[in-house]
Image 1 (cartoon, rainbow, N blue to C red):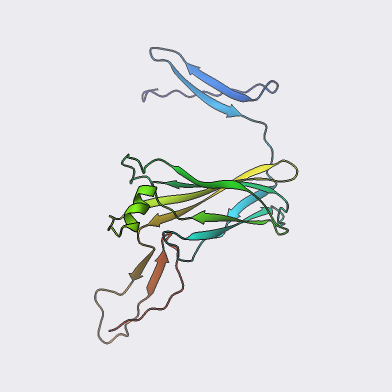
Image 2 (cartoon, rainbow, N blue to C red):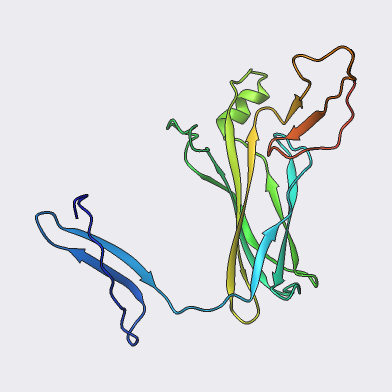
Amino acid sequence: DAFGTAVTDFILPKTGLTGDFFICVKGDVSYQASIRVEEYKRPTFEVAFDDYKAKYALGDTITLKGHTKTYAGVGVQGAEVAYKVVRKKPIGWYFGGQNSEPYILSKGKVTTDAKGDFEIKVPFMLPKNVMEQIAKGKELNADYYNFEVSVTVTDQAGESREGEYTLPFSTKATAFTCDIPKQVVDTYPLSFKLHQLNAAGKEMESTARYII
């Protein structure tokens, strides 16, 4: 058309093998794209994680809790959970160098319990050279990482479902915010809220002291 685009429809054959299909466009410039065709199977269960709301810091190992449930709300017990914990640089903080590549911190397998629940240990360890500088008492610039937990859950019937949870991490374990207004009318009562957040931005229970 006038915008240089072309649209068409086509029907895949009802018989034959599934797998990779290729769409080719030939002209002054040739182009090829691929699509993946697989037999559709309606999923029977899903994978989810609890939000982690406690404080975590460098050197900590936390327990992340996950759940499997059928769409009828029943836990999938006895399912195999293959997990992997990877440390990555978040988008926008990737500048290359020895600490920029994803690093596998742990991987293994666990089994869901009678309720369909499982637990994954997440160690908050930074690259070896950074840990050595911290051990020597050197002050580091603010740095940021994502600790990604990915799981593949396979039930006893052989069906597999995937899940993922990301825990942001920085050199500061918590953040503190206050929504007090910049200007108030002196005849009105002053009202404001204080918030303490963990590195994932989740609110934490804590005690604050303030002076007005």
